[in-house]
Image 1: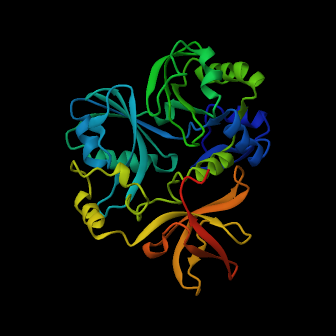
Image 2: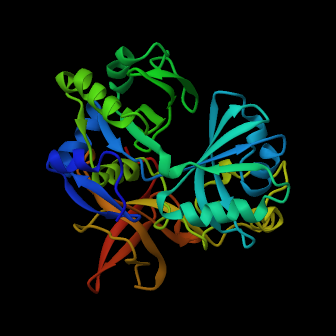
Image 3: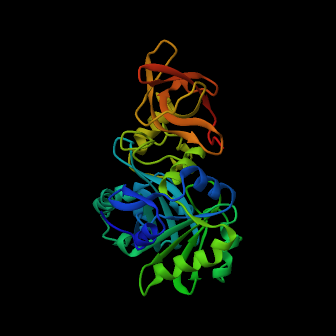
Amino acid sequence: MKNTPFTQKHIELGAKMAEFAGYNMPISYSGINEEHQTVRKNAGVFDVSHMGEFILKGEKALDLIQRITSNDASKLTAGKAQYSCLTNEDGGIVDDLLVYCIEENKVYMVVVNASNIEKDWNWFQKHNTDNIEMHNISDQTCLLAVQGPNATKILQALTDMDILNLKYYTFAKGTFAGVDNVLVSATGYTGAGGVEIYFEDKDGAAEKIWNAIFEVGAPQGLKPIGLAARDTLRLEMGFSLYGNDIDDTTSPLEAGLGWITKFTKDFTAKEKLQGQKEAGVQRKLVGFEMVDKGIPRHGYEIADASGNRIGYVTSGTQAPTLGKAIGMGYVQVEHAGIDTSIYIKVRDKLLQAKVVKIPFA
C-alpha cells in the first residue's frame, strides 16, 4: 500500500486504517456519526492526497480537454473550476473529474479519482494527438479538504488570500501557513461548504500545513475526519461515487449528469449521447429512502411490488443527518418518478422504499 505524507499522523491519532485505491487511508477516528456531524455543523479535515492531478500546458491544452470531456471548458477563465467527466466511445463514463483553469487557454489542472489515475493518464495520452505538454503530478501533490460551514472562518487566519469570500467553484493561489504556491479551491465532496487545499510536499510543507491548520482549528472544534464519514456526507447530497454510482457502463444522462453534458461542442461519443437524449434513457439513477427497516447496500437488487427485478442499488447507508436509511440506484425509467414505491431485496425479503428527490439533506 502507498502512504500519503499524512499517514503517520492518522496512525498517531488512533485512526482506523484500511486500504483504499491502493493507499493506507484513515476510515474513521472517533466514529462515523460524530465525524459526520462535525463536518455538517462545524468543520473537519480530510486527507485526500490519494487523488490524482495532471497539468496540461500549451495552446492546444484546452482543445484536448474539450475533445475528451463532456462539459464546456471553454467557459472557464483563470481562477475558475468545473465539474466534468471523460466519456468513452460507448457513452460510458471513464471517470468524473474537476478541471481547473490556471491560465486561460494555456495551463489547466485536472483532478481525477485515485482509483483511476493510471487509466485516466493513459486516456489523456491516447488522445493527446497534438503532443501538448502533460505532467502527472499526483505523487508530488498533497490535498487536504477542509469542509464544513466554519471551515473558511477557521482557515482565513493562515493566509492573505481572501478565502472567506471565495465563490463556489473558484480558487486562489498564494501563500498559506507560510508555504508558497498553494491553491485553495472552493470545492469539495460534502455539500457542507469549505475548501480544498493543494500543495507540493517539499521542504516539510505537509507537516507545516497540517500542524498550522490544527493549531488554529483545534480550539474551534476542527477535527480530522475519515473516509467513512466522507461517504455518508456525499451520499446525503446525492453526489456520485465512481465505481459505485457511475462507471464505464453508465452514461452521464442515465446518471443525472445531463447538466455537465454540453452538445454545443464535439467530444467523445457526442452523437451516441445525443441519440440517447432524443430517444430518452431506459434507466435512471434515483435517490430513495427506506420505508421498511433495513440498510440498502451496493449491489442489492431493486424490484417492483411483484418482485420483478427493475434495477440495482449503487450506494446506501444510514444517513446520520436524517436518521433514516437512504440509497441511490439505477431503475427502469418508468419506476423513477418521485414517490414511486420500489423494493430492495435483502436476504430474499422485499423491503419497501420510495423514490425521493436528491439531495436528501
